[in-house]
Length: 286
Image (cartoon, rainbow, N blue to C red; front, side, top):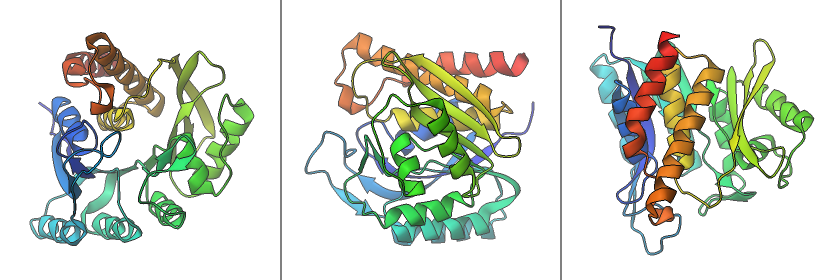
């Protein structure tokens, strides 16, 4: 049996609603990996579609957790970051990386800031440069189109897009410093939606497109990025990992739609975990 991979996941906790750590931890654990967490905040629910939620800021606890782990001599195969609530938290994550990330630690940053051309509530435009600085420390970044525009300081427009503008965006993102990029929310027509992958070392770009499903499903970005992380830590190429993540996310959306659940609670990824494990084993054996 091969050595178990250990991942430090730095996200918030929504006590109800499937996103952030309540998505990342079960997906990574189901994939056979040791998922450790540094919570950035605790909320009673996620913020999409809910009001009057409680919020407990855990900024002061983040670095002491990492420092304790460092004193224990713990090392991590990956550090995976998601929602960070302030510029200060992005700076703390840089300190966490210095404390925990070794030469071979894969650093994956999901620069959660906004969607559909708008910043999420609580963020100001000044947050984007701080996130761009953190992205410079990453091996892999996973922005959506809105977040890519914010990182680059360029105007957003609704798709469909042209391949040349997507590829220009990927090239510009690579100049921030990450070695690999997965840009989500890419669409070239009204029927399909997917992601573009980019390898900075080779300039290689690929597309993973799937049928566009109607409806707005919260937490799918976390489902996608967590499945991508599991696949990358499993030794998959970037394109293969993006394919697994896309297929798993689509399965989770379909499972939610078929059960007619309240879609702003999040997607029914849990019942699709056996399919994810099948995909991870199938790809690994080919």
